[in-house]
Length: 128
Image 1 (cartoon, rainbow, N blue to C red):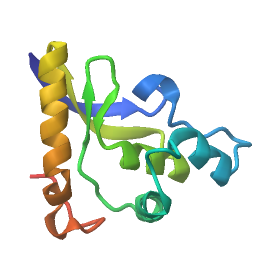
Image 2 (tube, rainbow, N blue to C red):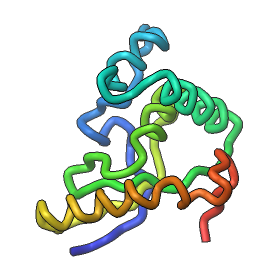
Image 3 (cartoon, helix red, strand yellow):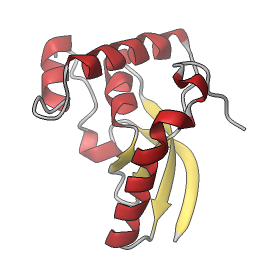
Image 4 (cartoon, rainbow, N blue to C red):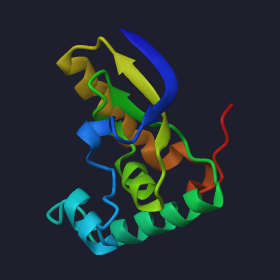
């Protein structure tokens, strides 16, 4: 297994799912990328806050991707980046892990994601 940290084009993450079309409205974009059976209004608010912060230039923790560039952790940040018009995201890519290892890593990342950002503030995270 190999772990690398790098910039990844938004167009390459999950097959370009998070790229917002030039004529795509905010509502259409959010409906397309946020599954309404899983995400609610609070998720929409979080994404909107993140997008505003990204436009201001706030620093966010990297997203985590598998070797196929599918999101393991950071879905809200990817949606916000698309909403904000970002071209790329800082990512940690985990390559060469088996399906079970990726599932375990994904579960761990999900479990710790609420406290990985100090104070859970939007712009409070700084790279070590």
